[in-house]
Length: 445
Image (cartoon, rainbow, N blue to C red; front, side, top):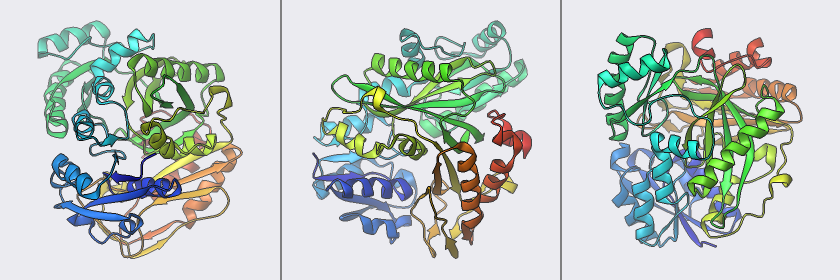
């Protein structure tokens, strides 16, 4: 087992990894930008190094600075968290070239699955359904028009690299398509340094269901059931739950088995998430693999009783999974609410600033994953997530009731947050009855 691990991230996920390491008797080294200097969560690390200025490109995305911190900190492994360099195959390869274990998949598997066109081909070979679309990247406008005419409008223009909704456009006619191709390519180039895009048939009124997987280096792969991530805005998840309430048991079993087949076919190891769209008739289609720990991993942890971050570390250290598929439960119901420093009434505009008052909820079944505190200044340079409220109760009805009670107790002053929107979502009859799709938030509010 590793003795020292560097956490190449910040905020909530950095603290989450440090806590897992401490429970395992592993020392941690933190890195921080000038914008995060003095943040209280850094006190949880055994050592911390400043790696650059506030912009992520000068700090959390700077390979050389992070590798230098690894060498100075005398660590054996790097945990990348989520975002930043977590799905960067070149960084994973660089770590291993420097004899530093990257706590995640091998860089070759990450590269294959990180490219959505390549991932589609792997899914096909694993007999996993994919959304109808182009066989490769779109080379010119005329080809896009031809393909769209064949598969039928509406179509979805998607960047082959990255995620988070960047480089995505829905085209409902030829004019939309021509405009969207250029916009998507420019956005993808800016966000991922890769302008490549492809087309898929746009699935109307879908649900977004993903499967949590774990794979060791000895050929063992298991799933930890599914999560419903349908509640989104701008392709960013807002509420996640496990199990997916509206999914028939037969479909649940099929979608989880499909995820395992894909992971085995790709040679993927460590924790990952296989994402699907599910249409109103419960047909499911593979869309992508997130080759990292997910923001919403706590809901899977709570229904299965499994610490995913600790398993990431154990797998990276060469341990075999002692989890047998038939022994992995799915107990009760869990819901996660992402608390972002954003103004939902103003197109989710970011709301950086100082938290002047903070009161966290508690009680049976309530978990808070957050790094903020009263007096904490939310910097404007990074993702707006300031914490996650996760609730686990025996039934979904109880989980919704407890989550609403916890949201009423949750007080954050000094900045705008998404707490009021979360209350509206969980109180809405369509959510309670699970009669929603990925456009629900945009259509309703």
